[in-house]
Image 1 (tube, rainbow, N blue to C red):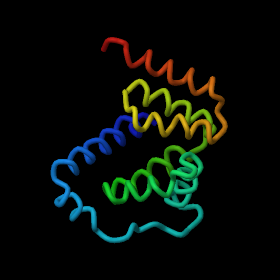
Image 2: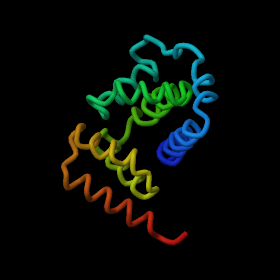
Image 3: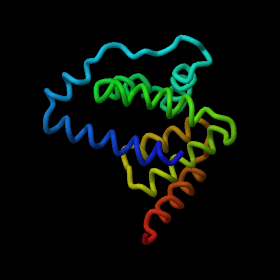
Image 4: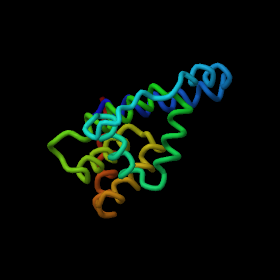
Length: 146
């Protein structure tokens, strides 16, 4: 799961910075047409969209709009690859996956995404104490020397 937190946040922050420096170029490249999402309920895109909506709750629509504007390709990959394949696979439950996400983002120092996933962990059933513990443990790992 780590590539989701080391890769997505880096990509999002890079594209934010690029847009701040050169908004017209990025905006023109972002207009490539509608996402090619399958309507099949078992498709990674459909599973991913459902799972992402559970994690982001009322912020889901705003997140998707922001991500499509930032990069339609990254938005599709986040939903189908990140949520639809990696985070929807068997094994850990959703609460445990969100707690892992909180710990990973805290360790890596991605504060914007950490804020969103603290809320997401609570939305899917993690207690405040569990979220705090995951964050504390992640920050402790992030401070260890390489």
